Image (cartoon, rainbow, N blue to C red; front, side):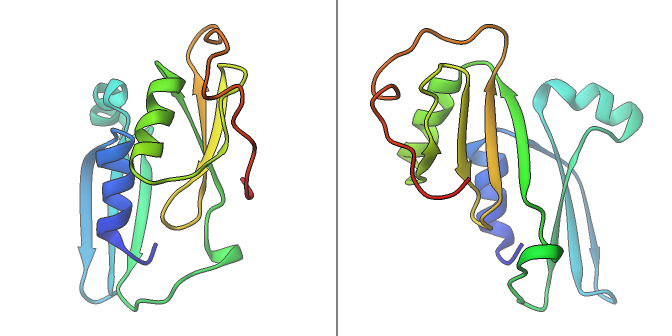
Length: 137
């Protein structure tokens, strides 16, 4: 990632992940930040998994392609509510949850994020049903 604060704002503040650990290496010129879903915290404490590791290299280079990760998926309690929160933050929903089950959008580092409705799909609802697909996901 090229902007640690923007990434933390996205994953922690917007998506609700919790920072569980951080490691900084002055010699290696990088910071590792570990995030987890709130419901996984007990397992993370016992096993150090499952976590999302964000790597911030201090050199400022913007990584593309093979040195960058391309896809994350999260199960959420209410796909409509979280998509609205994402849109309110100024982020484009690339694939809206028209089916009440799945949506895609991008992180500040252009990582594709998929949201999956926990349990049964929600009933189709506006504005999602009428919202077009846009961009790449």
